[in-house]
Length: 223
Image 1 (cartoon, one colour):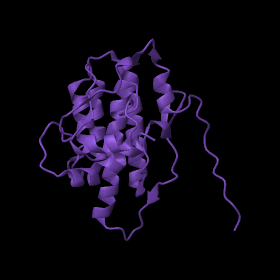
Image 2 (spheres, one colour; image 1 turned 45 degrees about the horizontal axis):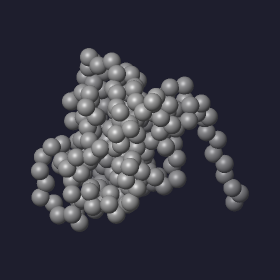
Image 3 (cartoon, helix red, strand yellow; image 1 turned 90 degrees about the vertical axis):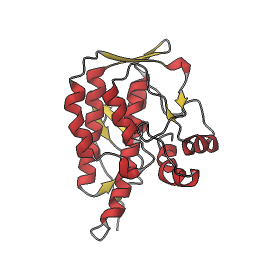
């Protein structure tokens, strides 16, 4: 059997990470709220389409989101997996929740303009911090409804992460927020806080269990 070639649409504006970098000037990041919400919703809609086809992406981060004429497109399905019809519902939900975790990190990156853990490249240190419940710090002028949404997405407990239907239902309310811009001083680095990843609640899970539930997703979004 010969080789197959996949021809895809050309994205005029590069990947999302570069798109956000282009919104930085003199160490200051600024994005229109309506643009942020539109991009976030388009990514969520694309992921919803994949999950409807029983496909989990498994490598969702800002360099795998392309921007074409301002529209966000999910790409790079190199390690994506289509779960067959004999896959149990529990297995699919666990894989699906992994994508939800990564989606939450993407939502945060849209407010910060920089990748998560941007100034920390030692994977061992990242693992240690995540296992201790550390997540990226909420950017100061982020609307509470939006920050609550992505904090739920990156919960250490997969069962506590919202479904895509629940996420998409939030966007009408988010679009109505009386916010013009989100800004961030990117020169200050990617700040982190020792807070629970479970939307502010405490956790009794041991580090090994926390790593098992979160670290693979967090490391992937840094690549």
